[in-house]
Image (cartoon, rainbow, N blue to C red; front, side, top):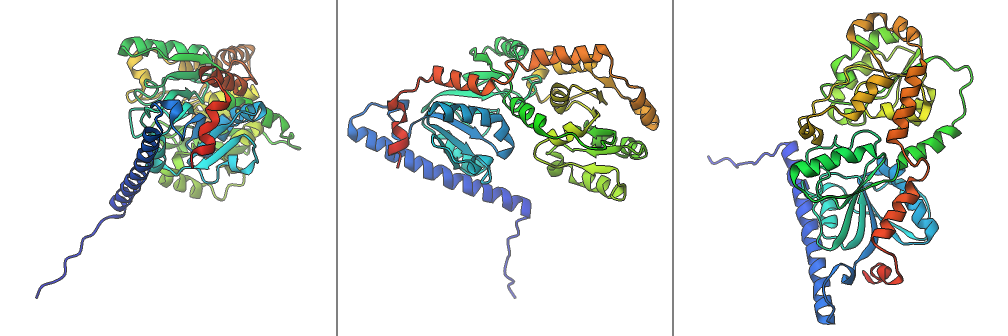
Length: 421
């Protein structure tokens, strides 16, 4: 008897094949569209070039997701106020950009992953602004019909903590502070690559958060609050210490807010489930998964973290003390590894933070109560803020200035927006 043969594909492989299929389909679609546009240009007698493409857009922002809205909102606002058209591509169908009615901003959902990259890889534009690193390294490639690619640094700490070659193939990098440019220049010399424009513009999302956090009312009967807000991965505070730190904290009687890194929900779900169940009966333990961190930052009297960049959000916005545990980071996969020098963020953390060791966990309440906010710590926070968050409140305008200076806006540059279809 001959039995039928069945082919089994496990869910992980199936998901990967489905993703590849979608990406290939999207690529073929946009290749076909690009070919049609080229034929139109050929028969119309126009010469090739970025600005001659019928789909050309002078200014484009690409957002990987709604979590980056606070990074781009000040730029969007600047373009809207100047009455200059801007195309806003996003990989979130529920991006906050769709919640506001704009006259000059054209938002569009372009899918996620390979589908989005297929669209971007054949883009025709003057200036493309993004937070996405790894241009020309992974799936995201430089389109030959884009004049200028710019990366906006969305953190006030070291710009070399991206994965290897994260910024190498951009035409410009927009910095939050001058100090970030020094290491980028060192990498350019070391790797023998072209020098990029390095422009210090400030930090857009901190400008947004500063305005928002000041509008949050003070709590009545405010309880002393400790915010535990780590990074993720094997060296992250929750993964490495977990119950060892949280058990004694839960016994202090203080309000303890635990804000895991967003990636932890994806990569460390088992660990989070274990800890959530362990403390589900403890009334003074709160878990924060809000998209914005400002509400927990506002409530906290002190923060405990590791090497997470949220340390700088907290100290710059709230000017309160921070304790750090295990501020070590395996730099091997990152650009910073090639520099073979200490990172600015770790050096400054030693000056403005209070180190907490595992041996102190058992007496954590006494340690925190004795960790007074000295004049030296306050001064170190002030100096770090001056270095890493320059041009406070001006980032959106300065970015718009640079974009329009690099690709000057004229009425002819917006032609593609009207005849693309």
